[in-house]
Length: 377
Image 1 (cartoon, rainbow, N blue to C red):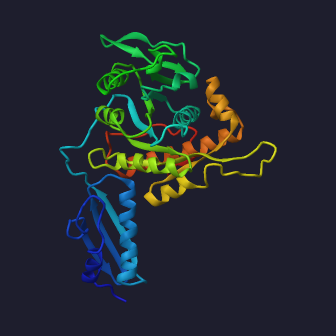
Image 2 (cartoon, rainbow, N blue to C red):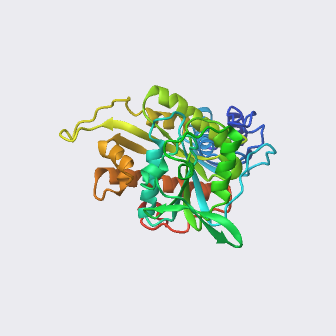
Image 3 (tube, rainbow, N blue to C red):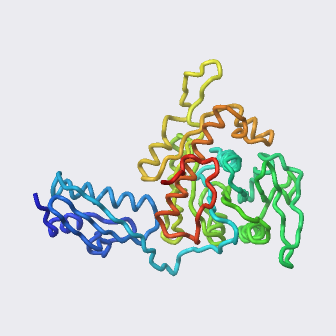
């Protein structure tokens, strides 16, 4: 059997790439098609640095050729990403020494985003990474409580002749939060520009030092604070947290869509399902799906983004957060194992993103200590 190049190009004209508006042949995305008997190689050039679009394009090409040309075709797709200049694109300014910046977001409040952020941070630190946490939830800062540093205050130090804030450290993690500058009972009643200014000070007027990962705990929703962060920092990727409940998933979908906007263009590293199920201590084999079953997992499949893992409802996670010692620090516990698996998946997705997509900055992870999931040949 010999494949016909013209037939293949005609078949590819039925595929539209997200964000391109035209079919992949007309838009120029198909750079070349080469056939060798029953083998075909398609060279594709994409302009959107988003992993889900890259994977969907590859899947669509294979499926279309098999269905419209030949079910016996052996197909190879080579994808090159060349980000085109977008004058409206929001670009942040890099901070020297910070290699990867991960935004942890949720569409809806109350899904456990801050708890997940804190546990990801301590797990990364246990793996040997240098970690910082920026609490960007100006109106509801949680990190001072979760790391048992409510009464701490960042001190001022001089770096290269400039006065800088020294982040508060807890469990080997550097933390900055608006909660350090207000009384616990004080409400922050600020308009957007004031909140954005406070965030910029915590980002650029702080001595973060050398970090492998900075985790940003974003407020719920898709608003002013989120745009301020995107304009301030080059985000490596975003992690979205949701419960399996339908109302939470509807908002999580909007959270994913925000990062995929053409002018934001931040790769979505994946979705974490929090409060996935409840297992009573006296019935360890039972699972009760209080908020629904695998809703966030199914959403990840629908949006073609990675599913990073699920966190069960466990009383000790809540208690640990309230006491200021994140649950993932409980050695040899089921919760430690859960967060280790999720964190390995997050790190792997960061590695994949840095290997396969144009860097937001010149980003490379320099230490993989304790992270067996990212061993490379």
